[in-house]
Image (cartoon, rainbow, N blue to C red):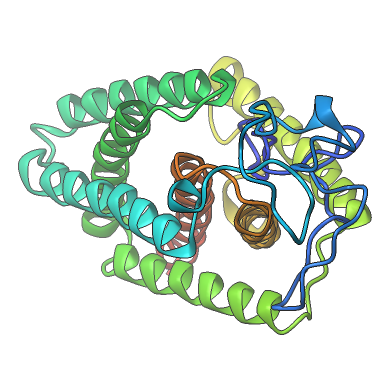
Amino acid sequence: MRSSNPVFSRRGFSRDNGYAGFNAAPQAGGPAVATQGNPYAGQQQAPANPYAQNPYAPQDQQYGAPQAPAATRMTMDDVIMRTASTLGLLVVTAALAWALLPVDDANISKSYGIAIGAGLVAMVLGLVQAFKRKASPPLILAYAALEGVFLGVVSSVVDNRIADGAAMQAVIGTISVFGAVLLAYKAGWIRVNRRFYGFVMAAAVGFLILMAVNLLFMVFGGGDGLGFRSGPLGVVFGVIGILLGAAFLAMDFKQVEDGIAYGAPREESWLAAFGLTMTLVWIYMEFLRIIAILQGND
């Protein structure tokens, strides 16, 4: 699934000469139009369509391509339920970590250690899923659970030791961005096409390189590194991170829309949930960082 997230790369619902087939599917509720870019049109672009392998699959009248049987195709309800499952598990484990892993002076080192360990394992599981050809629900749920532990401890530290109420403010900010991007996408104000995709991916690569360089300076030079994640520059880069997350949300919505329009198998809804969860975690962490910087300087 080709990635619309800043860290991971995954097989996409639609592929068109190396890009997610952004010119192939309807957007903003418009009617679906069959084009050569249809990633499920196995008779036109067989190598690009991972789901057009069964010659006995029913032919879709609109797209003229073998698709999954109607009873096993991905629907919006599937995406919503899978996303609710991953986010729900993440929230539960975050709440448990907040409650059970204290961040007072006597226990903060231990809690930090558990959080970092959980975060690293979650990253590894995310990478494994990213390179798998098919969705693995246990792997995705394990990722969500461990990511929740990491977020729970980090949020507790920021909320209790730096900026009171920061976690709730970050949650509200994340929900607001999600709602705004969804509204803009459905209204057609955001057009996800190849140019949009290329610009966002280039910006994300540059952003990640800068953050990696800053991290190296922090590890080997101490302090705040180059200052990209603290102080005024930290706020600026935090805002850039949120804007990138919003752009990736729009591309996630596009991939979900393509998958439903082209009759992707139901298990692909797990990949959609995986991508949306990663993007929302990204946005939440950027909000949390900005709030910590602003209130920590008061």
